[in-house]
Image (cartoon, rainbow, N blue to C red; front, side):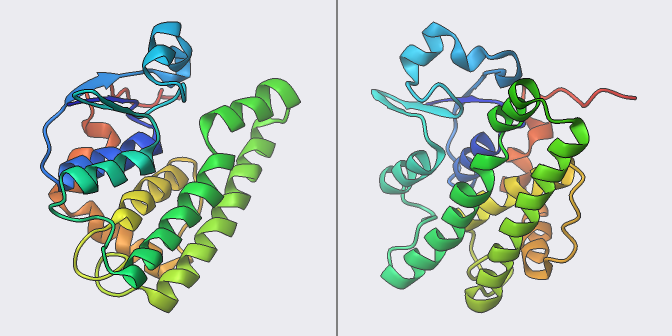
Length: 216
């Protein structure tokens, strides 16, 4: 099994968490999205989505994080990350999609680069954009967890897809200087996950292609 990943990509981070939780070994293939390696013709031939992550498992190639995790759940079902019970499944997907569809797409690297490089917004305006959608999105996730969540993870005593999505998004928000302290339940889940070996193993700073931020 191979995972094409970028250490700071939250979508890659989701998949790394899932792989670690399932105890699955893989070869790490770094793809630097900052230097547009994901746009190279040979990579796009492997992954038509032209982004990270890309999972290769034998003849299977998948290039969207939630599709990858769903495939892993179906192929390597222990432990399950997407519950089989229809109501539990719906709750987990509700939070997962609130993060992966409502927060991440409008704050990812290609959007931020378009804002600065094409539209010409200032660095302060870019940060204001990022913070606005983080606050709006995490407030929604907080309400969902307050209403339906339980236990140390998003939903009970075991991690699910929701936790795989929540941790990278909060990590990105903190890296960008966003104040997340208002989201009590979100942060309780995040802090609990940070203490767990699988989440630590998947963290950006533990990846082979990690590079520390430049000093000022």
